[in-house]
Amino acid sequence: MNESNVSKSEHLVQFAPNGANQNHNGLSGTDGLSLIPEEYARLHADIERAASPSRCFVVGVTSAVYGEGKTTVALNLAGTMAQNSEARVTLIDFNLRNWDMQTRLNLESVKGLVDILEGAEDDITNILHKTDLDNLSFIPAGRAAANPSRLMRSSRLPEVIDALKMSSDFIVVDMAPVLPVADTKVMARLLDGVVMVVRSGVTPREIVNRAIETIGSDKVLGVVLNGVETAMPKWLQRYFS
Ligand SMILES: Nc1ncnc2c1ncn2[C@@H]1O[C@H](COP(=O)(O)OP(=O)(O)OP(=O)(O)O)[C@@H](O)[C@H]1O
Ligand SMILES: [Mg+2]
Image 1 (cartoon, rainbow, N blue to C red):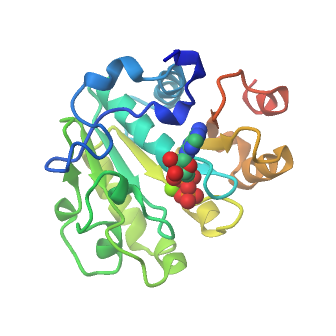
Image 2: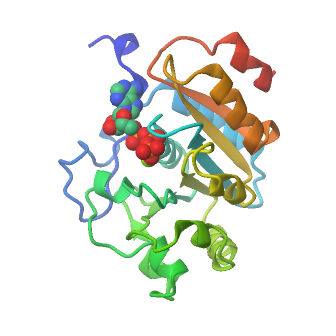
């Protein structure tokens, strides 16, 4: 297959949580290295440039609306970062309304962030799942939140993030979209930077612009155009000159 004809989301970086069924995403080890698209390597470089070597950098992956490819990008980005460096990377599913990352990694019934935030679990090490990559850990949502808005504003959340920062160089957070979920803006306060996923040719530019302004364009480190292989259109470039 010609690389240039493959949409970005088909390039899944290959890793799996320890013990997970490795057939689920064609996962495991470093076999997928040659499939890592330039886009993820570029994003990785952008994030490394923005980060300070002496402290953990927290990057959120969001989009204007639902279904633009956030989870796909967060998985690939965290996998790329872990595979291509020795940095300790923690991937968190914090899309509490559509917490599908553990399903995609074939980890169904495991404890996660919701268990900690709702007080059903105290020990953060019990929600930190190892993966086949030594330097990549994964925190699933675990289960549905009784009240996602409340959890986004919970005072435990910054405590949990602070604790995770002690054992991570980078934290990649799969988030809810910006415009339909007002809490995403609240959560953005805990982030050092944001990657905005745009479903190319589907999401109208006014909607994307509104999402970037809502999050704060200063916070947006980069844009992933999901579904095309072309350069970033001019109307988006103004944010990144
Ligand atoms: N470029 C693409 N081409 C075709 N399908 C894609 C592409 N990118 C993502 N998908 C598919 O679209 C669906 C939505 O992608 P994904 O779950 O990554 O989006 P999301 O932004 O996380 O969605 P949500 O807002 O529901 O959390 C998935 O089934 C995914 O496999
Ligand atoms: Mg998602």
